[in-house]
Image (tube, rainbow, N blue to C red; front, side, top):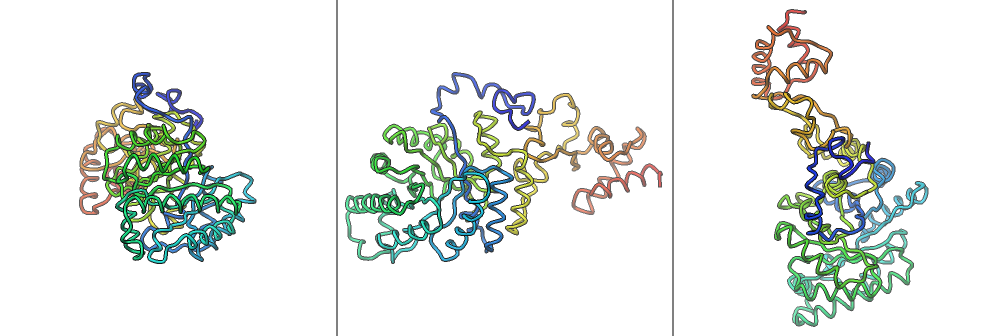
Length: 432
């Protein structure tokens, strides 16, 4: 079932509208040949408030990402002593997992100001090389961030905008060369704060970095929520035109304003070939691009083969939530407990139209659908739920059961469990 995607899945697996695939609509996009999902649960996910993982927990999460989800790429932190221990342990697992998984570890160079210098950055690359990972270099791209970093460093505070840009380019090129010399297998560059960058400088910087042999350039929106999704699309189109074809483009989007998935997908429409994602979107603040929603949209609304084992999305989300000790939201799209709960009774009146009120079969993402009860409960949902539990309700017991159910939920302030529902049904029916 998971092999169906895009147009082939319509009315079989999904209720997606065929209008998604009209030539007129597709002509407005600059879609790449493929999109790689790069999971950052073991880096950004560790920034979720209160999260302190052990080495064994990191390895367990890596096992879920690789074996259960078939994740093609994993990102980790690459700067601290704990990062070093985590990388080595995960690297040991990856070397014996039976799959080739791309890796990168983030340098977080400017966040270490005021002590930042090129020597420190190269020292971080030594740590990453020792861990056997690829790398992603954190580089400032906006004048605002360049100036802020310079002010933290003190001695650079008086530098002009042009000199700060030149210094950042030189630092980046030095780091790329050093990473290659150290044998780091993949060298990527993360342009931080790209939305506030001068577009001409961003394009020129991208061209230079691409010519220097960077494997991927990732545009990082820092906080997200400051630009229309359409702007992401247009910036990616502009950068793609000037960047060597051998250098892929990626997006790192944040969810502070609830737009991370939308901006990531808009980036793909502009030619973006990599999205950093995370299980349940765990990360600093409101997190970043959640894996489940992104994989679903790429597979079913765009038609990409992400390689993700879609039927394992819900189980993996639950397992990683347990490891992280951060409960999965009941209303999390696609993978939450309530993702496929149909509540309003009129929504149960169309059994021959399974996609009338949900976009996809819940089994596709490893979830399940069920009848939910609220103030809008009615006879159609009541009969369906009873049938699912192996029970029947006589016609003359429908009204009293609805009244009893409403009263129970009113004082409990929660839905009834299945055993509670059956017990109430037996009481109303007099079958005890």
